[in-house]
Amino acid sequence: MSDVYRIFGSENSPYSVKTRQYFRYKGIPNEWILRTGASMEEYKKYARLPIVPAVATPDDEAMQDSTPILEAMEAKFPDPAAQPADPTLAFLSALIEEFSDEWGNKWMFHFRWAREVDQVSTAKRLVGEMMAGASEEAMAPMVAQIQERMVGRIGVVGSNETTAPIIEASFQGGVDLLEAHLEDRNWLFGGRPCFADFGLAGQLHAALCDPTAGSILKQKAPAVCAWIDRFLEPAASGDFETWASLAPTLEPFLSGPVRHFLTWSDANAKAIAAGDDSLSVELDGQTWTQSVGGPQKYHAKSLKELRRKFAEVKEVEPLRDILAKAGCLEWLEA
Ligand SMILES: N[C@@H](CCC(=O)N[C@@H](CS)C(=O)NCC(=O)O)C(=O)O
Image (cartoon, rainbow, N blue to C red; front, side, top):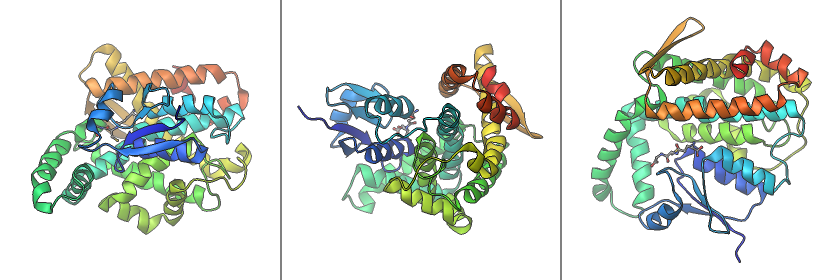
């Protein structure tokens, strides 16, 4: 029987590329299958939800949702470890992975669909993948259709007139912090990649491929761009560092963008629980207001899951101290 995992995905999907690069780093036998017209029927056999990635296991089981996929694979294929053994660092890596999937995705998705230049470029790349080899003329109606549909969906990540400046400032500030952190190291936690790298580089790789976010990254963040390049051929160059050596540049990332994400996520979960149709939350003096609907239920579920993971390590004193100092603890204990 084959031992190959088949990953159905898209080069333009941050979660697909995150998952594929994780499999490649781990050396888990895998086949990358673009979701196109030709593979659609096969993809549908495994996609419970109409999203990518979808993974077909060698036993012909289906897997979806990148975080549980990575966790299941990590348990099955422990070497090389893609999570630090130290429980404090392992939780911080999981926290940054979650931040990336949720808040890093707001950065990427907002820039991808807010401006005409990015809308057209992305729609062309998506259609080019689906209809490889077709002429520009043949693709044009589908490009226009995707552009229209996705622009209408920008609110799904909470992007609107009031939040757009907050998202853009968060991206700019977050990238500056990452640039400082990655200046002297290959990976977020030292000499080897972990879940945090796959999650965050997945989102920022997609951002780098887009005109506006890509030009910001190229202009001011050479170390971040080099890290994204490494993510495309991930390899260990040393060991994980200790918190003492990571803290000077990683702590500001936790106490800035990650704290904002948790503050928002808590407000989102409360709005869902109360059955509200909008949420409003203060992020350091800036008011974030968005509508709340079906897609936000997923975020509430994933906050619950993050809190479940935290409950398992909540007695670990060094972790509590780090999270308390970064203003993150209260949101994880809620
Ligand atoms: N939580 C999921 C999110 C996956 C997701 O949102 N995928 C997007 C692409 S990045 C998608 O498939 N959207 C619908 C589509 O492209 O048809 C994961 O981590 O795998």
